[in-house]
Length: 267
Image (cartoon, rainbow, N blue to C red; front, side, top):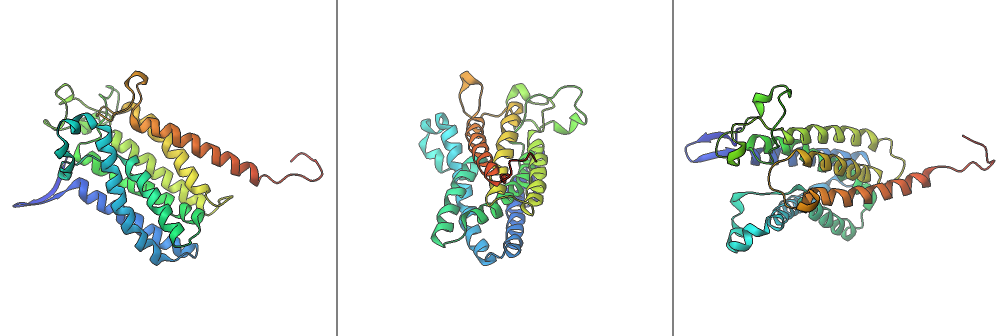
């Protein structure tokens, strides 16, 4: 992998940080022009983006601390070692959603319109950001089967994996997530022009991503916390909750949009 993209003396450009900034920038550009398209204030996008960037990083780091509490309880001061990294996407997503909700309510904006506006942004950040994970060598997968094409590309460098996995071709779970997130982005953008009710794009994003994340987690090998007896990770447990929540709201609103036939005729 390539955790360092560029190095000049003591100055280093890390792939993870570079891709994170690129991901956020692309999401911001999309949100700005989408706000113009739906006649919302694009300046509010820039204002909100600052809060979402900070809350996203903070939430992702805090959930990482919670998931790996056994490590931090032995050395509490290690919590403040931010440079060691460790981010859990769902943590950032949840806190960013809460911050966005407060901001939208505070400025009397249309909640469902802004939820639809921001939903593709969450997937844009993930689609690009996971490439940073791949280059960094984190969020790695389990040993890949022999038939997997181009398997030599998925061998990680020594020293970044548990000893039992070093030198073994692994599932590129980061790229799986990146590709599927990109497909979700394209679908959400397409659907945003054809949605049947306000808020549909947000709930579709939550429905599709939670389903995707749940199954990708089965291929990951890094430590992610969870319930060992059920063989489920923390992200899978959150995915189940989000999937159920999204399914409920989608079904509820889709049934509302079905127009009853006053003559009782079959459509």
